[in-house]
Length: 276
Image (tube, rainbow, N blue to C red; front, side, top):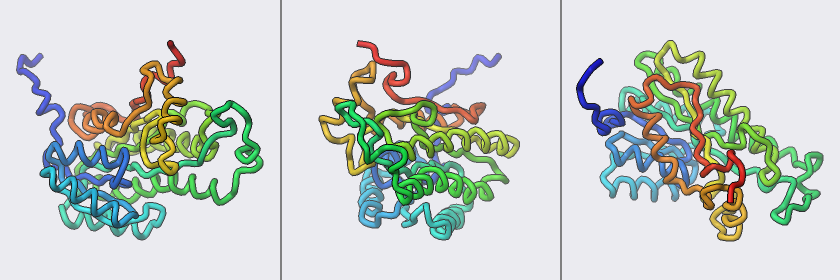
């Protein structure tokens, strides 16, 4: 056994890793981009919002990061592939990808008064809502993986997917299409991790609980909604995007060199149950 001292800076080193973050202009994606750029990675933020993308790149660059932006809607396969290929051409490789884009499916079949909402009943879920959520939250992850894997097979890489605690539990207060899409994401991560292990491509997921982001029109940025969901968390608060940064650095770095197909749950204990 080696007696050498292991330094945290070496263990979690991501310097110069070529990194893509989809949906990185705000929320959890921006938090990923921030921690990677802040630790020396070469980050490209993908987002469909030109103004938000420009603001994010400006802020991250002002903080000293090596950051570029690519406008792309990840539900448009041609746009996604163009953006990924542009990063590979610019840097000669892709090391890390955060497949992060996601949208809300709205509230669940119970409202915050714990009464059933007829508009959210399974038979009344709109077809366009179902298609949009599955396309954005599940199919776009699949297509992101498809786009980056050819650039990683020769030298290895890390794919980190934003999942959710909704992937492994049923939900009263979260829209059904969201729950189903995230369950698909969780199994996709495991399936692809198994296939790609021989190429030294690690595929893992971060599974947040309720988190204050812009998703769903910023529903969880409202103090009343935060208080409602915080009552289910033993830590008595919902997450903020920065809570995901430690796990992001872990999965992107050599600290997780023997970890693949894993999910790190970051929910303040919600999945454990209500405490006091």
